[in-house]
Length: 143
Image (cartoon, rainbow, N blue to C red; front, side, top):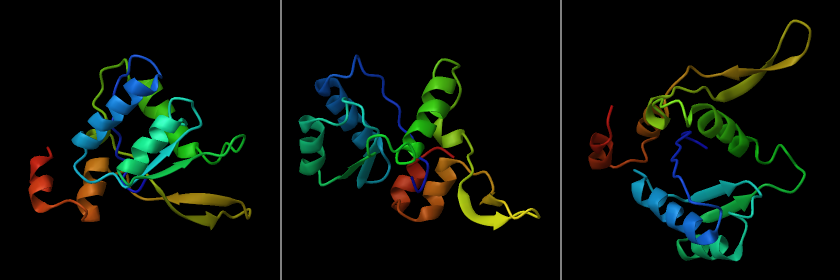
């Protein structure tokens, strides 16, 4: 969630064998180590195979609580933005799509709290600025 980085992989269906293969593909393609996985409550993620997979790779695994829609807001936001809106429109995704992040709150003249956002930046720039990439990996990514 820090960088907004997204990797999309098409799977045949929600069976754990396909989801685990897709997760291995995602992990292999990331320019930085995957340390945590935050999923929605779908059965394709919440199953013994996925929990075992995450445990073997020492990946911190969290999920949204049932009936607590705020828990998986980031997951559902990405579903709506990346998958549903862009998937079939052949747009450039991930590295080149600028997004804003909430950096704080302020009160307007009527006392209502509103969010303060940073300037739009691409996940590519966020991950470069974070300092988590090695120099070799940073030069390997397109800019």
